[in-house]
Image (tube, rainbow, N blue to C red):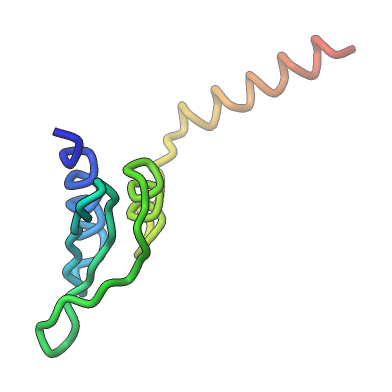
Length: 90
């Protein structure tokens, strides 16, 4: 059950980086490590042994990142929040 969170992180990584194939392994002590398939088809280990939270953070920061979509409404809301904070501080 613990590996579901790690598997989801690797799935997101593979979706972001279509040029590579990533996977993960679990050690006997329950730690996770990230692997990448090399050009020869062999899995190469690209991380050390990590706890689940550390592994998810690594997988989320590896590869290209998605740009967050910011709408005009989001920009206007952010501007109004900044205005309200500046008025409150006066």
